[in-house]
Length: 292
Image 1 (tube, rainbow, N blue to C red):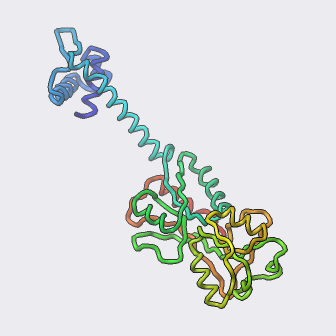
Image 2 (image 1 turned 120 degrees about the vertical axis):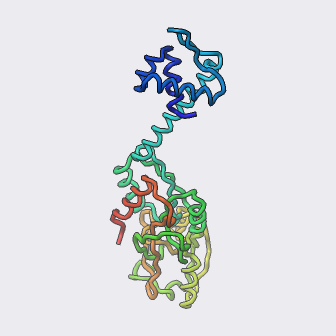
């Protein structure tokens, strides 16, 4: 059963005239008749009966007509959806974002991207590096913006976007405000609020303790807003990426001797063909003025 056969049959069913139906479909009458005969052979019975100048539907034709109309309608809808997707008018893109990525710079990019491609609908999933990698391998995500302290799987294509220092965040009036940078020894005796959502928390802890820093974890939370609120309330200090602070008044200083940093990258699965929406997104990410 082919679409042109269905279209020819429905034209005859509406006009009840083979000549008019052929003109409407822009084919010769013999070609239209052959296509309908092939459709009848497919369904196993006559759909139309011609009696001299009269044409009418058989009982089978009346039965099949609404089903064939539905098939044609759905095919046209699918074609329109595909056209919209390829023209980036109704395209959906599934994007993974590391849950510790600061919102300020990223939302600035999203605003720029939406202005250029209003027809692309981004479906954003936040998560840890492990979860985002798993979702990309399973095909649930097409692209991710993320960082992790270990190498990515070999099949992943990684494009560095920007390097971000880790800072010590503290409330106004804290003694760290007088320093230009925080050395591991400066953390001695500090109450520490652990950010459980940070993929670098173990790496930072190992770096500090290896340099002899002695601090006490007093609180911990997976929620970034809670952590920053606790810091502002004077419950301790914490480590966070340079572009993550969002609470007004929250103060930061970078780690020094050693400097601690991460590389935020655009990650795709190597070898997978890019959809038009993904190709537009990758191009926009690479062109955006990320912080230096």
